[in-house]
Structure formats: C-alpha cells, structure tokens
Length: 294
Image (cartoon, rainbow, N blue to C red; front, top):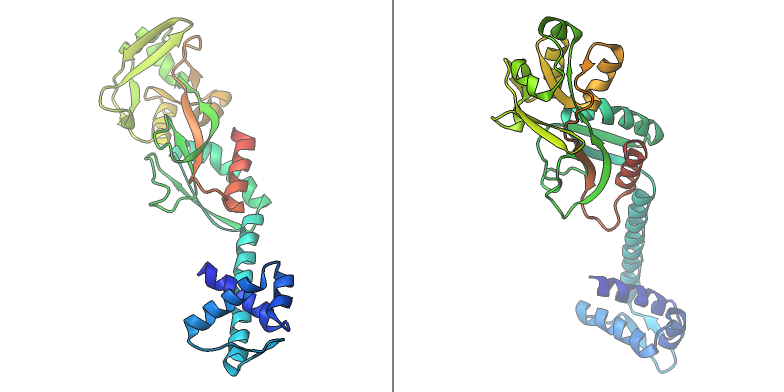
C-alpha cells in the first residue's frame, strides 16, 4: 500500500506538470522513475491516466477524476499522520493504570491527582489489585509492580522501594508487652498477610545478623488495609509497607517495633509496554511518577 501511495503522490505532481522531466525535477528523481510510477497505476487500473506526446502530456477523462481522488487520499493520510503526531505531542485520551492496592491508595492516588490537574485532557482509569496484570492482554498502559520483575519484555523504571515495618498499637503493647527482639514475636499475636503463603515467617536483619521467625496469630488477610485496621483496633502486630503505616506512626496510633532490626524491602517499578514511541500520555505520566516517587 505504501508503494501505491507513493505512486499517487508522483502522479499528482506529474499530472500538474508539463512533462515527466518537469515532474522529475520537482520530485528529485529521474523522469524514467516518474514514468514507472504512473504506468504502475495505469496497469492496476487497466486504464490510461495521461495522454502522452513527445513534448508534453494531458490528463484523460479517467485521469481527471482519479487525480481528485488521489488528492483526497493523500490529504486523508496526511491528516491521520497529524492526528497521530498530536497524540504523541500532547497528553490526552484514556490512560489505564494498574497498581497494588495499598501502594495505589497511599502513594499513587495523590500523584495521579496532581497529574490530572497538570494534564486535564487525560482521563485516568486506575485499577487496584495485588495480582500481576498482563499489560497487553488487559489493555493496561502503565503498571506499578511490587517485588521482583519477571517480564523482561517490559520497559521498567525503578521507584523508591517499599520499606517493611513491624508495628502494633499502644493498646496492644500495654496488654501484651513490647517485643525487644524478633525471637519474642513467637509469643505474640502476629497478623499475617495471606498472599505471602501458608507458612508465615518474618525475616529480620541487623548488620551481619539475620533471623527468620515463624509467626502465628488469630487473623490472616490478603488485604493490607484490613490488617492495618485490625492493628489499629489493638488485635495484634503487623508487618506492612511504610506507605501504609507512616501516617499512623506519626500520629501515635501505631508504634514501630524493634527499630534496630530491619525487615526486607520490596522493590517497586513502574512499567510500560515496549513501544518505540510511547504516546504523550504514557510518557508524561511515567515521568511525572518518577519525579515524585522515583
């Protein structure tokens, strides 16, 4: 199709020039090549477009009508190219984003709110869930991934990792005491995150020392917000990301436990599909998030 479009472009110039030689000068190609493009169209149509003489040519009746249609086609192609270029230049349209629930609520939504004010022509559809979405299959433009990356085909940029903290409410600690060492968690009601598997164990490090503590408790849930609510109500100890906990730690509703011991951090990335020329909405959103959360 691209060859035919090129032939149409050559025909338009040839039809409005006195000769193939004159058209060749305008197009910066040989007169022979101009003739080949015109003859290729005539062979496909089964009709003559130009009546040729030794010195000049003139349009046939079919050529006159075909010339107008060629102009319409080329104009439509140029308009389509311009529309695509505008979409690449100005952030606009629907942007589909996926993120883990807690991170999305606590970290990403404030950034999305600021982005929406900065780019009012972009409509954002945010889906929050803790599973790994297939960007191509589910038509997602940008996703936040927590943990190790396994899909190496995606374009990934690093965000600040999620720091895990062990916390409990002052009311719980008043009733059950404050653990000073990870090994003491075995005597506490530790509320586990269901998606981490059936055997719940928390690993702590301090300098070169490391200890893995099997934990158990009266409540298991696959939602960090629900675990947070349970901890705020004094049910037990939780280990969750700092993005979920920091507001409640600052207000005194939760107390950080064993601050000299560290839980593993979880890497975070913002990922997109491997497009050579991503749209302006994708490019600008990724840059906006990286500037604030990278």
